[in-house]
Length: 271
Image (cartoon, rainbow, N blue to C red):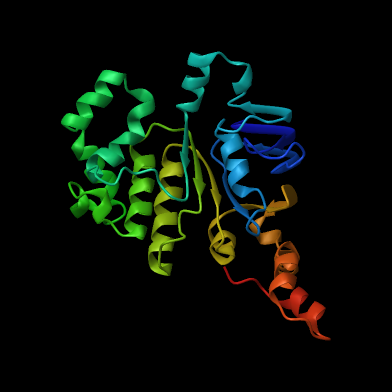
């Protein structure tokens, strides 16, 4: 089992005492599973990914990652556990003046010593691996470009290339398609899913593109207000379930009218 959450409640650092991002959430994810997280903005998708990545400590409940309690482990043991995880935020933390080759090879930092990391900054240790990872996203010609010369979509795909050079056993990916056109979105998902299957890695991906989630992922978890609304096979998720998941947000956006409630229930969200 890659992840096991039992009655987890989590909040961000600095949040009000009772302002939980996740509320009594329970979830089990087996090794090699591929899961999409969907739900309106503020539903808790990012908080869940950060909790799985051991970046947010639960306030309540229990979390096990690779059958270990990460928060009971000492510093070095927790670091070793985190090294088996790859968290890709929506906006990759890429230093603007850094070369793309160095930005991609940063995916190996958890396995490197401090001296290897410094050496690679001066002279990249394995540029061929970075080139191959970028080639999966048609970015190999950007190998020695500066990060600040990339477009937003190229930066996102550069962040995904980091995952390919890492040795992670679980990919936790937050909105990887927000800056991509439809063709690149499908290509990027295909690359991530193929890589996960090849190494039997777990893939948990938050998406606003509901249609892509339903078409590409065998299991979908719907979140709203920090709680799981449904956790089901994509083939079992109906349009009505999707409409209900996003219903409150539609109510906020639609003007009041006699038929307002019927429109809100019938509308399929466009993400």
